[in-house]
Image 1 (cartoon, rainbow, N blue to C red):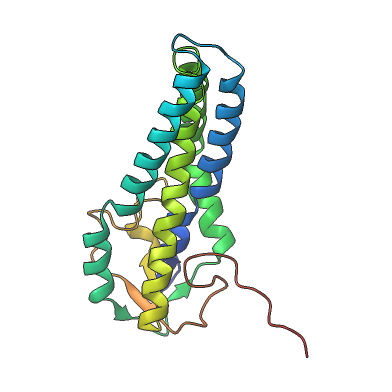
Image 2 (image 1 turned 30 degrees about the horizontal axis):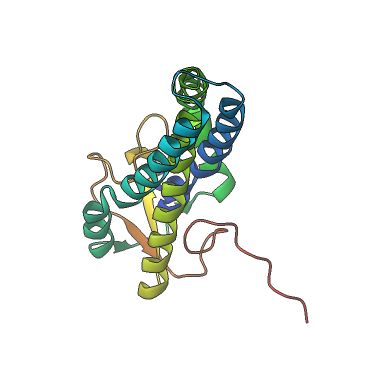
Amino acid sequence: MARGGQVGLARVAVVVRAGAAPLWWLGVFAAGIGVLVPGITGRRIGVLAGAALFIVAAAVVAWVRRRRYTALAGSAARAGKHDVLQDRGVTVRNWRRGHRWWLLLAFLAALGSAFAVPAAGGLLLAGCGAGLWLKSAWIGRREQSGDALLWVRVDWLAGNAGRPAGKAVKAYRSTGIAAGDAAPGGARRKAPATV
């Protein structure tokens, strides 16, 4: 949080996207290890169940709370000159630091589930990561169509630096499309091509 009446703002899409890569890679790793374990159901059933869980998890995570995001985006106020835009790297680091124990527990649960249903838990975890990528891409399309990036006050985020559409969030702020160091959707902004 900034000093002297200044407000720290984090990109909404970056907060959403911050968990995508760790969930995806931990899920893929857990699924890969899980395939090596025969499990109670057998590998074939485990992988088929995992594929179904992957699709369901990706769809649910990508779709959940869209109405809330849309309402907050529709009423976004323009960011003021005293607002401080948080770097993408800081936002991602804060989210991952705040969720590190949850990520570890989810990974261990996915590994443990392989003894019952091989690979299913890992594919479920990977599906959650894919869903976050889909949601951040959807936010990015909204940002591009509205020609404005969406930001949320850092002090309105949860204690673990997540929940950009949680109950504590009263409104979003917006800036021009070129503000900050992240592209629409929360990805790293590509360096301009040299001529």
